Image 1 (cartoon, rainbow, N blue to C red):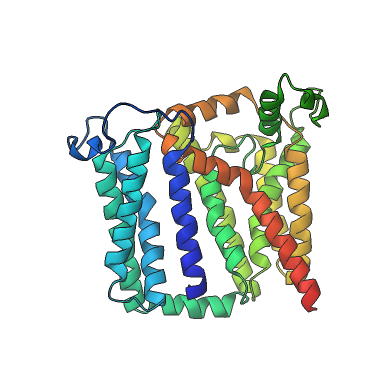
Image 2: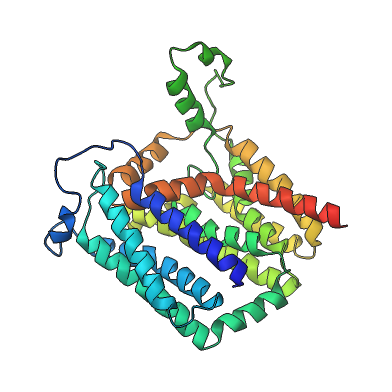
Length: 366
């Protein structure tokens, strides 16, 4: 990772932690107790589970990794680990302090300890990988396999699996937010003259037809493949990326279903014929588009993103999907509900902006 990208990634990840820690950002209130009371609470608290332990460590480990790497790349080699751990501990302390004012969150000294430990794990991993030369090898690998300006695509590809963790009404259907945006706008402008100006759809939305569902599933899986094709130098690298993207998409979607409904229901989402046909079409499309030039891949990706969002947002969410969201909102997933939700909503639009910028730059430089 180049020193020019390490710091922005660390800051972006810190912002994501703030978002996940303080979501849903409403109901702030004063409890009449010291906000530092959580520091003297019993350890461990009675409501803790191993899921909480693992998620708190895993949530801060990437922050420690990115901070330590950024510090090492800017000359703070010896102080990288302690400074990264200190920054992670201070961030966690601030989040726990603020959570005491949120009705849906619980401040905990155990959270603080595990978050700090997670930061330490990530920082030590970065220091060891740097010492063993792994990061230098990654830099050489990236130069061989990717074009020089591949940072944006690599970040989007890394965020695609976490975005899939948020339950989707259609498998791989990221970005289906128009219906909820319309409902939110109606609530905000209800009783005002602006309500008549809103371009909301008055007729009831019809469920997706089987052919439209096939198209959404196929495009949802094909889009990350095309995004990788835009920045990869070699045909072999594209083929490997397609395998990883398709396999990773299936695995993460199965994991999301298992976390929500239990391991016995992990693959029920793939039982329908349209979903299976869509996955096969995505595989065939990924193979056929392997030799396409990078510029042409960007053009096809742009069309795929617009078509996917156009078809996907013409359909309503189902009652089954609403029940799934209720489990996330009220269960143990509240900690990362907002973060996963916004990743799932915004990922295709971020990819669309990235491709538009990339195409415009290519046109100017050509």
